[in-house]
Image (cartoon, rainbow, N blue to C red; front, side, top):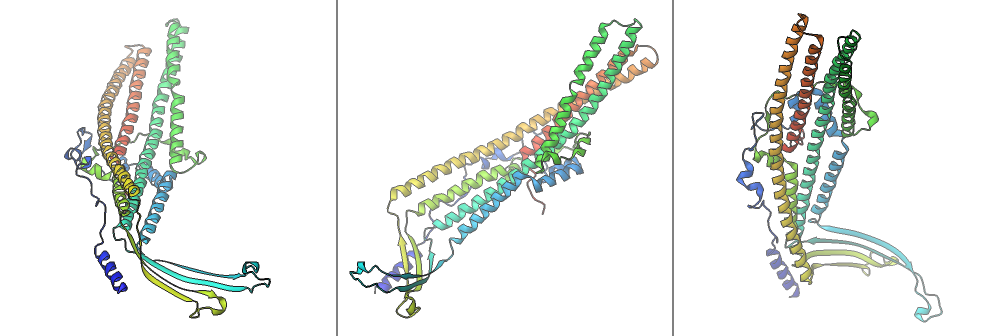
Length: 471
């Protein structure tokens, strides 16, 4: 009768099993679902297009060397190796969590020799030694009636997806920083070429000034003026050299190498990176689906929501079914009917301290509200970064257009001045000044191009592209 009642109780409880805690979905009030967050960008311009951003955005530069450097960094970067290891650790923990839903079991075996104290037995004769053994097998299964284990697995799964997104975020940053370092190398080389030409022109002016002073055709102070201009221009060269070398060392570190392994042949790059088309940026909806930091924030919210269920399950009984079998006794009676044993039946554990359990639920609910706020903040930050990057890029394009126009105007003036000089209609110094002005305009355009490259890479970084692995 007792057995039937216990079986009936067990069947009834099993039939009533449920999963406590909220089922996760992205909250309707989350910023990510706002229509204003998913439309076209406000700062889109003639330099961009609403077409989808390609996964390998750096291919837009059409530079095979840059392609190879980024692929090398994605295979060897130390930060990326750390992120990959963290992902693998998270997946292993998920496997451990999944195993909690399986039948648990254990085996133990031991043998001992024992002898009681004679005086403890109130004897003066040495008691005999006994050889004892114990061997057993125990198995159990947790019915997880209220979903505590299930919610724990859901939380671990969300954690592993957050770790995967964190790995992708590192890929985004590595790709962007490799492109930035390579662009700095090439732009510095280009600026050094222009500066070297300017120094040569000003040296020529200094030599001609000395010659005209010797013939009494120029005042001596003119030499000081031109010498000062030469020194001021030459003073810029060491900084450019250092900037180029420092960019090379940054790039080398991104490739997972020490400075002594730097590929100095990269210093031969003197042509700025160039994109011959409008940059595809997509829209807000694509951005919110692509940015890894947004996925990290959303998965953390999902994990915390699942942990509310884990905490809530502690309010209810935990019912397991277990069975044991084994043999314990004297070694001389090994596995005899006198030593064999077995047992089976359900087990119930129930924490009676409700206040502690409810406090954990409240703490987890508060954490979920904090995670939702963090999720919203990440979305807002992503949209703000793209809008500001678009504004900066548009301003850079306008500035560069005007700098290139100024360079073209100075080049035309130089050409006309050279014609007048060949015809003997003006002196040599006005021609040299026109050449110096043309070089100054070229220097400004070179610096502007470097700024445009930096704005482009900042825009690509804000768009969150470059993490998808080739299929």
